[in-house]
Length: 483
Image (cartoon, rainbow, N blue to C red):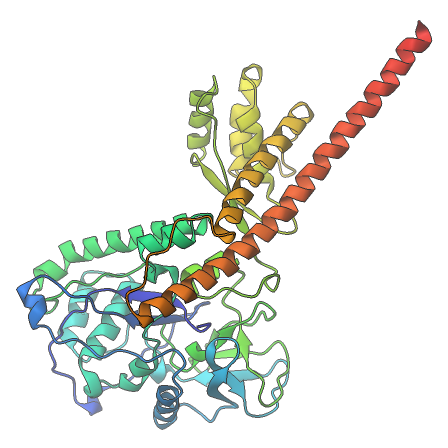
């Protein structure tokens, strides 16, 4: 679903005291902070082995991603809660299942979507269960886990929560990589470097949860009787009902923004729309892998000008200078292996510098640090570094890495990867088909970039070697002449 954002993921639901404030005590959210990406929250429950968990009542959450009934209820509630008349409505769309569609002509540069501050959820918003909010704030919990806990708390109040209609309209089953099991990541993304990014993000989730469990949840069991697991979010966070129905397009460059004069959320169109057309915003200049990681969808092949694929480079452990090279990399904050982004248009100078270091011979050890600095983008030189004597070997090393990566993608795309598990029911079968489709679309787009890099590298090597051959032929001709 294209409107899935960076999800605030929870795997085991907490049970919160049901003592909502009276309606008159709701003052709405405080002014939203400036932000660039919208957020959504989804919850799924899993059985717990503890006796206390068995007593917890499951919390109804969200809807099917294509549901228009809950979307209509959300739209009606927002209108009754102060959302001004809009030129858009929630409808079923080709891109993203649900989206905001123009009802009237919309001009380029028109300011749309004003969402008043009372309908924006931030870290300063009032809690229906004030005790929970006070504990979270006293412990300086970052915005993203604080807002996730906020929504879980509100969800536990069912219809008593002011945000009931909003929570009911959230997708029950997002497809961000944070929701994939380790087995699914290993099966479908075995070729893609985004698998490693997903595992890193999930590890961050676990670390954050463990910190919250020790510092807060275990100390206030009456408020947090069940475990909560949350993922990492970057920057300031705000939940914006209605605005989060906007889907992403790589062809637009407009973002949600904070309007200081009105203290509401707006965005300004960078193109015109006719009635019936879906209105889009940008989630940022992200690769297809990043969009799948955080939002759960993959654009069509070739449709994303910001698409890239990460190529992993490593030192050779049999290198006589392995230790010295590794120390140089670590001095500048680089790892082994190190990932670099390839795009259709080329690759960064940092990757070439890293490759120089990999192939650099012992007699050039004095250049190790210069190469490592350039690979980390901390070099004093603004034009990069160049070692003509290493050029051919460097290009061949990059080509070998590129072709090795292509082989992994081809193996998966041609059905030679790890065997799929056999689904036990229709729901699991549908999930398997969708995840495999997403993985195939991602791997196809990433392999396409690798093919382009392979072509460029082969051509450079061919030109270099044919030039050397011509020079050698000319030299031999001179030798014969002088004889």
